[in-house]
Each structure stands twice: as C-alpha cells, then as structure tokens.
Length: 365
Image (cartoon, rainbow, N blue to C red; front, side, top):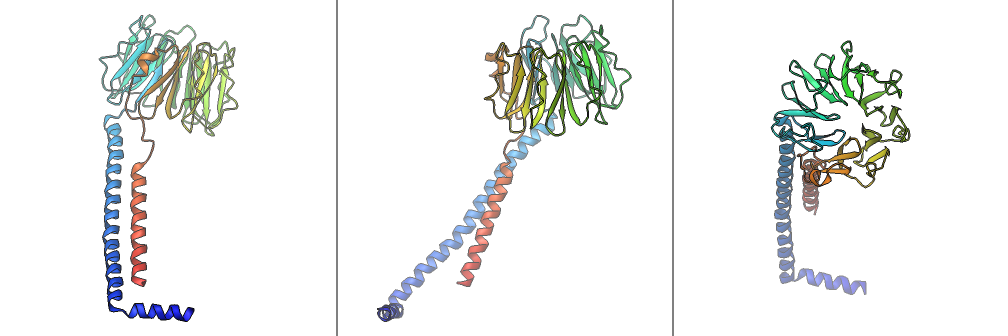
C-alpha cells in the first residue's frame, strides 16, 4: 500500500501540467502573502498613528488650557469647572453664589456655605455669594496656588507656602498667618487645616468635636475638611478621620485603595483606584447611595448631596443636588482612560513580528 502511494505521488509530481499548476498556485499564494503582510502592516501603522494623534490632541487641549475639569459642592449648591476655564453652577442661589456665568480663565473652584470662589490662571481670586463676613474680599490676593471655601471664610495658599484667610473668624479659623511650608489647605465650617511639606498636618479654629486634632497624623498625602470633621488620605490608600461622628461619618478605618476623600456636612465620600465610590454617614437623602457609580475621576460632598465627575466630563449626583441640571453637564475630558496610542503601537509591532516570522519561514521553505 505504501509503495503504491509513493509510486502515485512520484507519477503526479513528474506530470509537467500538475507541477506547473502547483508551482503557479504556490507562487500566487506567496505573492499574495507578500502583498498582504505589508498591507496589514500599513493599516496597523496608520491606525496607531491616528489613535495616538487623537490621544495627544486630547492631552494637548488640557495642557494648553492649563485647566483640568473639576467639581465642587457647597452646602446647597454645586459648581463645575469646564476645560475651557469657564464655570457652571446650580442649586440654591439666595446670595448669588451660582452667578458664575461670566467667569473666564479659571483653574480651580471651591464652594462654601453660601459662596463660590475661583482661582484664575494669573493667581488672583474671584468670588460670588454671601459676603457678610468678608469671605469674598480678595482685592489684594495675588500669587495664590490653591483656594478653599469654608462655612463663611476662605483660605488661600500662596506660592511661598504661606497661607492667607479672610471672612468669619469667631473661632480663629482665619488665624493662619504664621503657617509656613504648606502644600495644601482645606476649610471646614469653622476650622482650617493645612498639609505641610514634611507630611505633618496643622489646624486652627473650632475644635469642639476634635476636628482639629490632627497633630499626630503621619503618612498623609491629602487632607480635607467637612463641616465639623476632618479626613486624611494616607500614602497606602487608607483613610483616617477625626471630629463629629454622630452619623458615623468618621468610620472610614476599613477603607482601602482610596485615591481621594471628600467630607461633606455629615457624610464622607471616598474615590477608589478602580473608579468606584464608597460613602459613610448621614444618608437621609440617599447621599451615600453611590455603590453603583463607575468610571469616576473626582468626587465632592455637599450638605446633603454627593457629586461625581466621570472621566469623560459628565457628572452624576445623588441626594438633593438639582439632579436634572447637573446630569446635563459635560465639563470636558478629565483624563484619557485608555491609552489607545499604546495599543496601536502594540498592534503595529505585532504585525511587524508576524511579517518577519512569515518572511523567514518562506525563505527557509
């Protein structure tokens, strides 16, 4: 049987017509393969270049404007900073705290009890809203790198690491003139907290609930003040909190993988590394029902509402936060979520590898 098969194969291969057909078909296959591989390679390279350009363009828009979209929640109003440096606001407007429609060149926003403050690209500050205690008086402020609005006072961080404050001072919450080496400030209802370059934390103001007892905190990367409690984000992604805890708003000891923390009036919100959100505290208006949120890039906590900024610039809100208006906002790209440029390059490299593999195999054949 084997001999017959071998004999038959020899006869077939010795047939000139069959041999020519085999050679011709093989040549066509080889020719098609040689054409196909460069074509695939070209498509992959074009694909990667287009996507890389798209990602770079998005990053360029952010860099040129020097603005990263953000949200801020006051006691009863919400503010959004758009990628073009303009601002939107909604909610209670009794004192004009939402009258920000003519603001331009803004790089940071913060919302207080009934006032809204914006830092401009030139380091000056603008504000609208309740000014009963002078919390909106910034005529002489310059060289400001960060701002934070409290209940009725406002705090600013200067380029030299010192701090300036204006507004209600019944609890000495504005007595921060001797602070130095500060890299971040945050204002609560009637207290002010500062994070220092050496990783320690200082505080001034109302301390009836021990919200200023932060002197022994270490390993902190960020501090934020709520109405009467203070939270600190640690380098390992855990959170510490001190102060008023009637609604368990300070019960954050089991949180892990946190990248941002936002205390509100009586609740605390945490943003996780995977873009999901956790919350504890008063939930009378559902302000802690954030378990189904995904793709979140920033969170903000107000009086009785919670706001989340998604990576592509849309906004979600829960609680009493004028949801119908806020959900229509699109503040602009916060950060590219997928590095399609890198993926395109990987595809191109993979195709090049296949081309080299087939070429070498064909040569051996």
